[in-house]
Length: 251
Ligand code: NAP
Image (cartoon, rainbow, N blue to C red; front, side):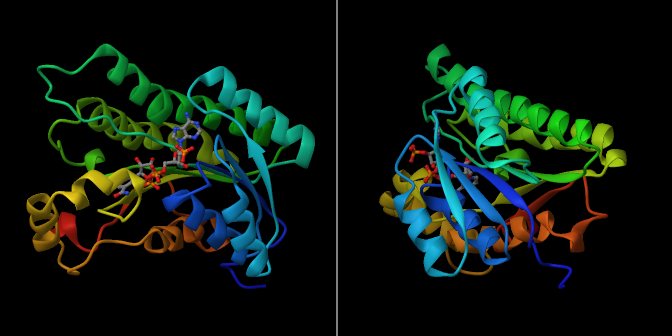
């Protein structure tokens, strides 16, 4: 079997209904993983795309905005579908406002789903894997804001920088037990998350001008890196946050 094959594995992908999460779900399934597509919106498009390319998947409806809801969804997946080998923490939100005016509500909402839930889902996953004496892979979706400060997105930058640190901590604790923990940091990718940026002609031109590859990323560009990190070919890769950014950080 190819070292890149995910045959015989089961993946739990959060926010799999659209954008980057959907592309990840489709890509993992194409390599043979059975995908549990998790989120609060209809997974019909994702399941259709996976099945059209010969893969298998189930949907699990859950709001992932709080730890209680997210870990209940993880427990439900274990009970309904069986052991999970790959966890992809993709679901996330962004709130934009000047830091002088930034509200506690926007701080908490972003920190909760983008960082706190990432930790507690990872904990639930690792507890299950270690109790079963099995390894596994966690892949967190970070951001360029794991490396840079950005502007008008204080909670997003704090959360995504936190994800990069957490990825290292969890790798240090769990990799000796066969669980690799990595993150992928997408550059500027066409999705709902970046709609406001692309709609602003000045921001759009400034972003494009800085991307060495010369175009916005597509969700599929991110998925390949996630699938690699989930595969046996990446078994000695752990604790890293891999930028997939068309060369942005190299400039
Ligand atoms: P997106 O289309 O907005 O996707 C975000 C996903 O998270 C959606 O599936 C969304 O579900 C889900 N989600 C948000 N809040 C949720 C909640 N309370 N419960 C369940 N699901 C929830 O944007 P995207 O670009 O694909 O974002 C995916 C990840 O990539 C995020 O972590 C984002 O920060 C990160 N990222 C994106 C970019 C980029 O340029 N696009 C760059 C760096 C990092 P709904 O559709 O139901 O809201």
